[in-house]
Length: 260
DNA sequence: CCGGATGTTCACCT
DNA sequence: GAGGTGAACATCCG
Image (tube, rainbow, N blue to C red; front, side, top):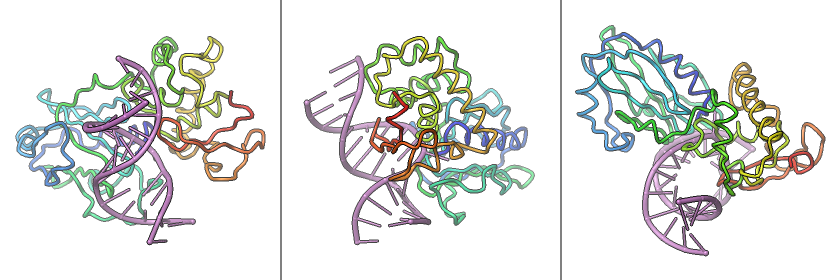
């Protein structure tokens, strides 16, 4: 997925779907319906109504349905949102160059003939009616210094794992987290609770800067570390050989020379 | 042919 | 309880 930056783009795409009457719902893929959501339930909740607002918490896109319900959309690694056939993001890293309508896992049709479709080749995303937003931590883009301190707490888990724990901090994916830790000169393997005040401030400042910076550049894959995410590459900052390991269950590239 | 890849969830360990 | 691992989802790429 789309990490937080891409989902924010989808949120703006979804804004084009607001205030248009829904006349039908396409939700035939039962696997794609999460949290016990039923197809009939979706139809009842959406048909005849309009989306009133497009919100986001971390990587979860939330569409308010006339104060009646909330439609939650998740995009997994390869999901895209298309409104009237156009996507906010034409091509996703690690997804497909093809673009097959057979990958449409969920959609609605509007009275004006337009559509909003969630197209996801790998079916890693999902749709849920009234998702429990409180299961997510605070949004990474707006978290404050004190909030970030709470996220790390006294945890002995690796720093990277904690930052990617959506229940503690919502929005950080694998690429953004590696980029942030690389820029902040912090090892992904550090115990999350071991940062001193200076390091915590540096992490907070860097996190904010990475999100703003990469949003402007065009996405989670536009970081300074990105081109070096391959075996044998050197650190773009100091040329030292990058380490590749698994942290928090995800492939991690980092520079042992300057990330401590 | 095989192994991974912007993710989440769950079962099963320690 | 806290962490860690591996599987599942499906497709493409090197």
